[in-house]
Image (tube, rainbow, N blue to C red):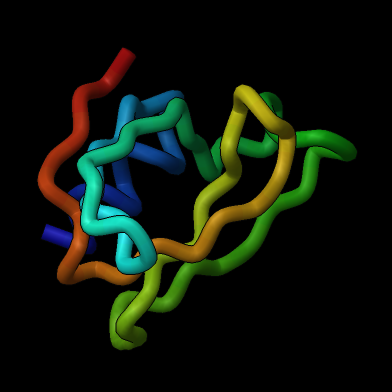
Length: 77
């Protein structure tokens, strides 16, 4: 699952749904790893063997690290 999400994030914007570790509430945000949509055109090599996935929050223009186990799904937009 993580590999597929990372690929989709590299190719565009996704609406990512996850469960917050703090509030246990379901949350969602638009995210990407595509440099054209990131402030300063930043790019990175996302590792698949970590517990978290780093992704750029397009709405608030900041980086988010989401625990893989909390990701409920995503939709390419």
